[in-house]
Figure: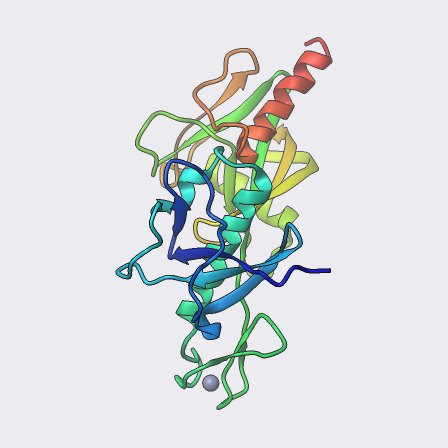
Length: 260
Ligand SMILES: [Zn+2]
C-alpha cells in the first residue's frame, strides 16, 4: 500500500533544491498549497509517491536547503538517485519548454492520462524527448583508442561519441561517427550498456568495437587529438561513474584477465 504522504524533488533548469551540506534532494513539503499543474509523478520512492516540482529560482526555498547543480551529483550519489535527479530536471524542462504548440502556436495542456502535453487546437501531442548517442571504446589488441574533444579545456581523453541521426540504426551511427571523427573502420561491435545523460537529455549507448582498417586521422573539428593507448599507460580519462569510464575500465580488466 502506497503511503499518501508525498515526496518532492524541486528543480529549476539544471538546478535542484538540496539539503545544505548533504546530497539529499528528496524531501517532504510543509506547503499545503502546491499547484497540481506544476507536479509530475517521477515514481514510487520508499513506498511513497515522489513528484518533480518546478520551483521558480527567485522564490524562497525551505530553511536549511540550497540550490545545487545536477552535474555536481555525478559520482556523489548512486545511479538510482542520479537518474532520479536527472529525470526530474528533464521532465520539468520539457514541461516548461512545451507550453505552446510548435505547430500552430496555441497553448498546450497537460494530458490527464499520459506524460504528455496536448494541443487541443490541432491535436498534436508532445512527449519528453531523449536523444540517443553512441559511445565506443575501440580496441587494437592491448591498446584502445581515446580522443580529445575540441570543446574540452584541459588535456583529457575519452571514448568517441556522437548522436544517432534520424533514420540511422545505432550500429550505422557508430560506424559513421568513428569514420567521420578518426577516419578508421571498426568491426565486431559489442553492446556494453547504457546510461541516461541528462545534460540536457541524452541516452548514452555504450559499445566496444575492434579496429578493422585504416590509420587515425582526426577531423580537427570535433576531435583534435586521438591515439592508441596501452592499457597500462592511459592518459587522464573519465571516472568510472560515467559510461565512458566504465567502458575503459572493462577493457583494462579484460586485458589483465587475459594476461596480455
Ligand atoms: Zn497546435
